[in-house]
Amino acid sequence: MIRKISILALAALLSVFLLAPSSGVGQERSGENTGAAEESPLRIPKPDLLDLEQIRFITDSDYPPFNYLDEEGELTGFNVDLARALCEELSVECSVRAVPWNRLLPALKEGEADAVIASNRISEEILRKVDFTDSYFYTPARFVALKSRPAVEVTPESLVGRKVGVVTKTAHQAYLKDFFTRSAVVSYDTSAEAKSALREGKIDFLFGDGVSLMFWLNGISSDDCCEFRGGPFTESKYFGEGIGIAVAKGNRKLRDALNYGLHLARSGGRFEELHLRYFPLSFF
Image (cartoon, rainbow, N blue to C red):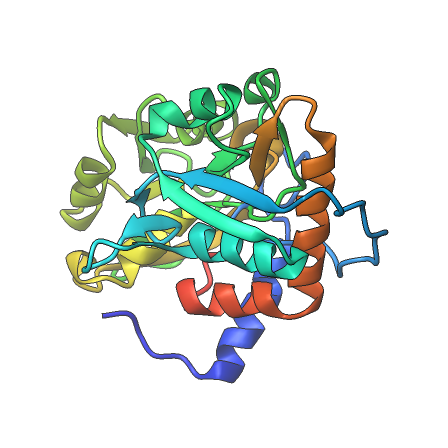
C-alpha cells in the first residue's frame, strides 16, 4: 500500500520534483523526466492557433502510471490526462488512442496521428526521426538498499567493493561502469531479478529508474524491505534530455502550440494537479 501523505507534504515534495535538483557524479546537466520545468515558467508568446482544430494523440497502453488500461479497459494515465488537458488549454478537439509501442513513430510518420505522448525520451537518435516539444518530465536514476543496512553516503568512494545490481544493457549499467568503477557491478536480465537479489541480500544496492523504483518501494511486492539511498542522478548524457511530445519532423506549428499548452498547464496549476494525482511520493 502506498503510504498516505498530507496534501502539504505532497506539495512540498512536488516543488522539489519540479525544480529537478542535481546531485550526482560527473554531472553535465541536471533536470528531468520524470518533472515539468527546471524553473518557474516564463510567459511565452501565444502562437497562431487559428487553423488548429484538432490534435490526434497516440500513446501505448502498457506503461503505468503514464499510460495504461484501467480496470474497465479505458485508456488512462498521466500522459493521457495531460494530452486532454493540453487540448482544453488550447481550445481544440482531442483524441487519444493506444497503439503498440513499435507502431508509435511509424504511425506519426505516416500521418495516422498528429503527436505521440508516450514518455519518449529525447535523444539524438530519435531527433533524427521526429521533432519534440520542450521536456515536460524528467526521470532520475536512484540507488536503493535494504532498510536494515547501515546508511552510507552514496559516492564512488563509499561504494568501493560494494555489490551494486543493475539491469543489463541499460543507461544505468553504463553509468555505473563509467563512474562507479571500483564497485562490484552485478548485471541482471530483468528488473524483477535485480529486485529479488536485493531483497535476498545478494547485492548491497540496486541502481535503476527512480520512477519504477518509487512504485516498487511503496507497493506490496517490495514488502517494505528497502528505501532510497543518496540523491538523484540526472546526467543527460546517460538519462536523456527528458520526456517530450513527439510531432512529425518539421511540424513547427504544432510543436509551438503544444509548448504553449504546456506553459498554460504549468502556470494554471493543472500540471501540478496531475502530478499529485499520479505521483503521490517523490522519487527525487
